Length: 318
Image (cartoon, rainbow, N blue to C red; front, side, top):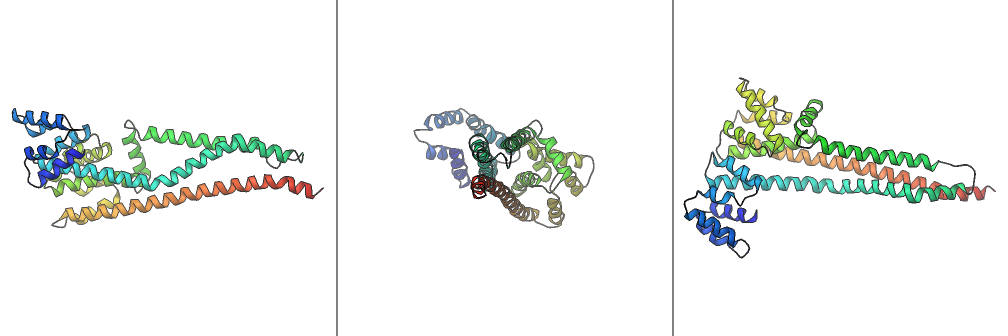
């Protein structure tokens, strides 16, 4: 990725491909650079010479963009889109990491507590009285059911968001809540690629064809195909967007964008707006998860404290 990014930057600044290859050549990539150089000398087109050394994802994007623009622009756009996608995913994962780790840490703690600590504390309390304040077996069952529920929920999430069921899951989520976090995330992915194509001078039709061809981006491709199908049926542009499972907020911005001389700037503003909205939702989800974890930890501490005080209360009443 770094070598391809370096080639893209050099090409953007007017260097020839020969100069680019010479500049980035080192001991680690010398064999590959020599092979590409030999292919170019034997009459191969640049994209043919270099494609065999690209990742599947870069190759797919590059081939789609190359149909409508020069190799330099296609490579630059490919790098830009993939870097933005990776950066955005890292930001989302980073913001969700702490509350999720806290939550799963709590689950693991409950599991250890139910196996090792709870039986001992319950036995200690029971040894001072025939009255059992809370049957440990009941607590164990509640914890076990809770852990099983979490595990099943995770497995269901993995299945529903697998490639096989992703589109149906997305459509179902859109039907019940078209302003949800998931809808916003996938809308952001689609809009970023779509706007990047428009900025590079591609028409709406060409942009949709490119995104529809990117099957590696499952939902954005599905959205692009839905828009294209609606336009083919004779629906107006805005109505086609409404029928394509996009966030309603994007439709509002597009109503403004089509009336301006620079729709790309309006869409760029929308991406900033949507990014901020997604980040706010992540913060809310994080606070909710943390509140649940702290509540459960608090209840657990109260229960342990009551068990520890139970023998003392019995002795005081003797």
